[in-house]
Image (cartoon, rainbow, N blue to C red; front, side, top):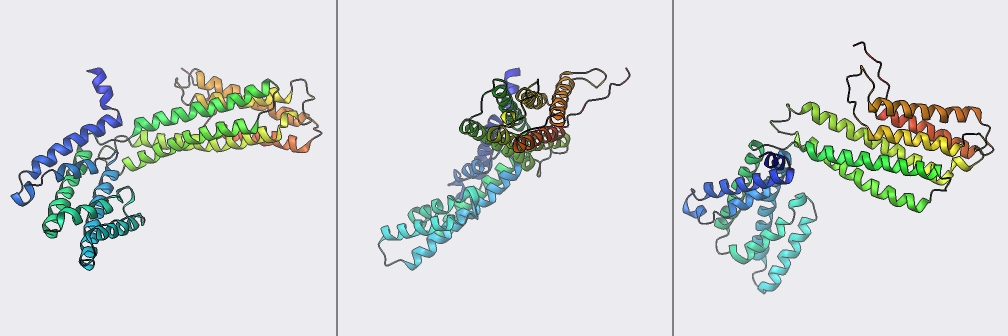
Amino acid sequence: MGALWVQLHRPAVQRGVRAAVAAALAWQVAVLLPPLLSEYAYYAPLGAVIAVHPTIADSASAAWRSVLAILTGFGLAVALYEVTRVVPDALTIALIVAVAIAVEQLQLWREQASWVSFAAVLMITVGLDDPGAYVLRYAGLTLLGAAIGVLVTTVLFPPMQLTRAVEEIATARSQLAAHLEEIAGTLREGRVPDPAEWSGRATVLDRTLDRMRAAEAQVERARRANPRAPRWQGRAAGIREESRAVDRVAVLVDDLTSLVVELQPHRRGIDRVEAGAGWVLADALAGLAGVVRTPYHSTDGTTPDRRDERIAGAEAALDRLVTLLRTTQPADEDGFFALGAVAVGVRRGLAALGAHRRQAQAA
């Protein structure tokens, strides 16, 4: 039972259940209609499946856009058929398909645009004997099914898409932290980071961030017209804030990576201090990575937790980097300013993550 409950929280499983229920209901409703429509009841489940999407807003959008695209296709087919009666059927079909596909490029129907050409072909091949009745049967029953699909999505555990967003944020945090740790490891080894290598890794990270942004945007869409939204308002707002904080840090990290890889400030005239600029810089980047990996506190603030320790370590590493900048007379100004920019970037990254030491409270 526990495993089944876990599976029901998966977005794909929920969508499958909603689609199945909506299709069955649409069929049952359609077969109760007058014979003119009930004989074609199978169109209703089609509309139901079309309209079942991860969010209520997406379901409603898909429903009306699909029906509008179908009606557009029917209208194009009938109009072009009437003006090309003397043309061979093969050429008429070719013309209708070409025009329908051209109309689809207007993107008025977004993902449902392909229904224009599909409906046009259906009309020209099977609906011309009685176009009015065919439009009523196909478009009407599809609209009925789509309405049922939207209703089922609204009533049957309407998704907030929180689980996927949380997973994508965690993945982005992990990759972002690994990215910083790998740069720090390279610096500690005294190696020169290879621009091509880091560019490839940055591309992989960008894809992860894109998925995180898409998941966060889907949570925002899921809140529209969703009866569960008030209950999960705080959690959804927290996900939005966390996603955008990680996004801001990712932009800063991209700048830091470019500075370290291209200018190599740790090897440009300021390595004459005992600690070595490379190690100090590596510690600052690793400290930021530790905070990225530890997003939440596990205590109420009366005692330090893992996040407090990571924040303290990051701040201490940043202080050492700032001290190095204040006490070193560099021979290379570009390298010196690049190192200063890294220090500023790390500080801004910590601020974006809300990283500050909590004051211990009396028990």
